[in-house]
Length: 392
Image (cartoon, rainbow, N blue to C red):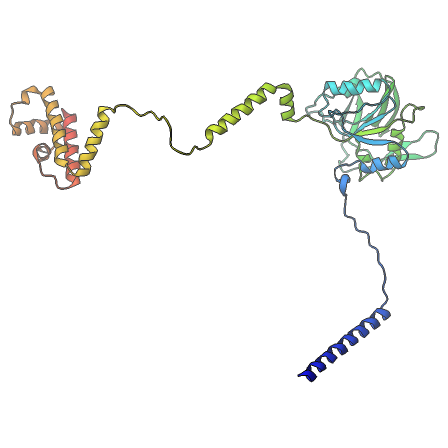
């Protein structure tokens, strides 16, 4: 046994040596190469919710102080006279108070960059207080031979240079002046008689209106000359002021329904909460015996009569029940036809047969037959007696 165990151990060592030798030979003869492969995983992190994150990073790399802000929050910030504010949304929640705040800041020297909702001719339009103040509007303008899919960049000439920029505006969204427009136009961008961007002086500041802001999003900022155009807008504040911050506001801050009710209808909210608590308390099932349950002191005569009848029915006292019904019929006959009182049974049967139009034998059994063996006999006799009562 010891010799056989030693042979197995030697065999295992031999196999291990062969495996190590083969692995070393393979490692020294095979040529390894490192390979790098880029895989686009799409937007990650903040870029998933911030479509202008690439524009923010670009401006920071260019030395521009840039910050994403939330306007009209409870802990808000103060805009400076040398700052620039870019609002890429449609400003649906900007009421008159919020709009007046931004217009007052612009009059004091701020630079406001906005776009707006472009409407069709027959479409309902909500009021835009900022565009009302500058007497401009945005609308759809599509030529007969123009398609919504057509999307060619606008060529923008640069002053004092022999070059031009290309900016990809949405062709069918255009800006137009309203009657009464009297502001100073500092510059504008027009393509085929369509106005896509305009900057006007507003007090000591300026307002820049863009037909759309698609070109500054993450997917488009690196195309054409969009980045250069954004950098120019961010530095288009008063020429001598270069210390301002470029703020941009992504989402329109809207107060929640509960917060609005608590702010303006606190008593109503408290009353509703109390009502809800009481309603839930009353709906919760209770356990244990009921206390102080009021029972009626006496029952009605009809209840006693019904209970007595149920008892006799369960005991099979059909004859007694029949007798009670016959007594009621006899009493009603004496009231209606007193002259029948002294008549014989045969004459009474004859009169009742004539009134009820029933057979004589059927009337006689219902009135005088005392043998009741089955439930059907009892039911039939009760039915006949009821018909006789109705015929009186």
